[in-house]
Each structure stands twice: as structure tokens, then as C-alpha cells.
Length: 471
Image 1 (cartoon, rainbow, N blue to C red):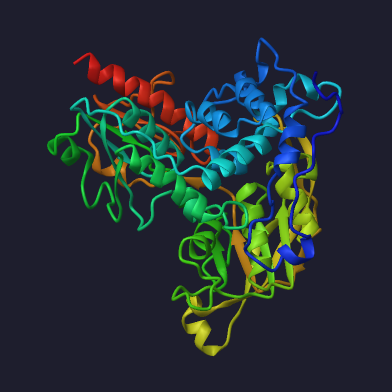
Image 2: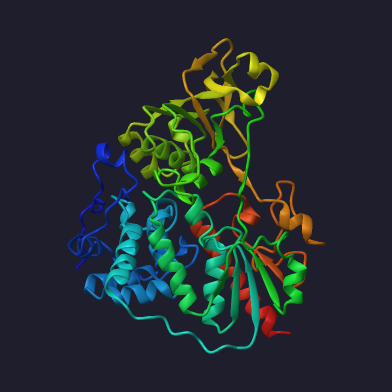
């Protein structure tokens, strides 16, 4: 019989005062006792509404039933039939707006902690199982994957399980894409990502790093090398800026650069050769998950004050509620209904001759109020006249979104893109305007979630299999 308690079991975490000064994982995970108790809250609905909300269609009631029985390895096997990255998804997927949002238990209380249970199962497997995945027999067909982020890894894993000889080409020196350069260690330990990548390698997936497709090799050259199809999952790593005065000053970063220096290059370590400004007062412009990551990272680098500057209210903040709550607990201050109009820099005589030498000494903002809803349904922010003020900061991190890098588009003839630089694809297949070339994830949609990128990778893998099988 199901446990009908209205609240899900809390996720154990580090104390906020301690975690704000270290890069260890914030959430420490369910114990076996907590996992069994949370699994008992699942009703095992026959129509499985939660599965409808999962982009990769994990059989959620079945894996939770295995947890309830104490068969944690059996639960992992069910999850891994649909997901190539269960330990990652259990940590960073927005379950509250996907599977958990459709959970029946959420009607009169809190939904089942599906994400927390997925994380527990994956972590239990990684700790207790040394069983290597069985490499399928080759079907003799070769597929190239561009990018080793969640879309590329998912596509690679699904095709490898079907017997394809898959090679992943990654521009950076480590596989994982946004999972290693974008998401901080305190949210997603890099050892977890490496473990997931190693599992795919055991299935036969080859990973070639330091390979920039569009520069080291072109898409056309991949076909010349014998690959029968190419999947482009190169992400959206091109940062956007506001176009305001002062964005070229020292101490101004895109969130992409700031996080890459810390997450991939380990700038927070004394032994790192990658420089980073250890600012005392930091403003992060934006309200998404990346902005929360940047703000919380700045705290851990020793900043005394960290502000989130966002032009709408708390209700419109797009970041996951859990990430916002963690940021607040750790001491990040939220300057809501404010918008930057200028970044201020100190100039001495030498700086006047070379403005690039200017250093941030503040950020001028204007207060906002919410007007009518915009095309997305959110109320549009409107400036309040003569409300300008200066925020005392010595570093500014811009986190207002990213776009796909134009390199592949510019070096691949006949590849159609939209006005934002995203590759145009068929929704049900991921097929681009080039025969045999498929795409998915942020390279198509612009910056989105890990799980949506994984769903696109699965869609493309099915379509690639059908394409090659029909030739």
C-alpha cells in the first residue's frame, strides 16, 4: 500500500554557510532508507502520466517499483534502457516542470521525488556495480557525432546499442560539453560525467577530443572518411551581450567564459594556470539557471557581495526554484525589477589613451515595473523614469543567453539555419536540409535543458537508424 504522506522526503544538503565556500556537491543524496520511503509514495498509476512528461520516456513507475522492492540494480537497468545519463539527469533535470509536474500525488500535495530517486539509483549503481556493459556486435555502419554534450552522448549511446560504429568529435579537451564546462562542480561533480562517458566508451563509442568540426575537419570531410550520417549536437556556446557601454571593461565576463574558466579549467584551484578575477562585489545580469550558477560560483571564489540583477520579478524568474532557493540560502542578493544601462570604469591618463584598460567600478541601473504581457506570456518590464542608481561592484557577469556558434553553419554548404543561428530540422526526425545530416539540442533550439537535448538525441538516433537501414 502506498504511503499517502503529502510531502516528499527532503534531500539532505550541506549547510548553506559551509557550502557557500566550497565546491563540493550541495545535495548529498538520499540514503537507502529515504529512497525506500519516497518510493513508497508512488501510486504506480497504470496510465503513467509522469512518463508523458519525460522527454526520454523513462518507465518511471517500473523503476520506482524496483526501488520499493529494494532491487536498486534492477531499477538502474530500467532507467538505462531509456537514458544514457541517469546520474546526470537525476541532478540537473527540471523534474518539477516535466515528469513531476504530471504526478498524481502533486494534485493534493507534493509529487513523488522522481529526480531524487533517479539520482539515488544511478549513484547506487556507480558505487556497487562493477558490471561492464556488453558491447553490441557491429552492424558495419559508421556514424559521426559532432559535440559530446547531452544531445551528442545520447545519440551516440542509442546508436552504439544498435551496433553502429560511433565516433564523437569534441572541440574541447574533455568530453561532456556543457556538462563539464557549464554546470559547476557543486551541482554536478565532473567524476559523475566521466563515469557516464566511460560507460558509453565501454559500449564501443569512440571519443576524439580537440577536434573542431568546421575547422579541424568539415562535415563534408566526415562523409569522405566513410561516415554514412552525421549528427550535429554542438550546443549553443556563443554568448550574447546587452550592447551597453562598458561591456569591454576589465572585470566583465560572459557567464559562458566565467563558468568555463572555473568548471573546465579549474580556475578556483591555486594550482590552476587559468586566470580569473577574484572580485569582491559581483553583479550577475540575468535570471536563468546559468545566472544562478555564475552567482554561486562567484561566492565560492571569495566575493563578499554577489547580486542577481534581473529586470522582472521573482515570479517571472526562469531559473529552477531549487537553484534560486539555494542561492538565497547561500547569501546571493536579488536585485529584482532592475536593469543595467551602463557599466562604469575607472580611467587614468593611460586608460584614456587605451579604453580597453578600464576596470569596472560600478554598474548603473534603472528601476523597472511590470507592464502588459509580452509574446511569451510574461509581463513586459517598463523603465521607471528618473530611477537610475549605481550599484557598487568591481565585476559584472552577463548571463542573458547564448546562441549556436556559426562555425559549422559557415563551413557546411546547404545547411539551413534560422534568424537566431539555430539549425533548421524536421521536428520528428532531426533531419536538416542536408541529406544524411541530423541535428538536435541547443544547436537547434538555442540554450535549453539537458533533458530536452537528450530527447532530441534519441529522436535523431531513431531517424538515423531508419535512414541508414533504408539505403
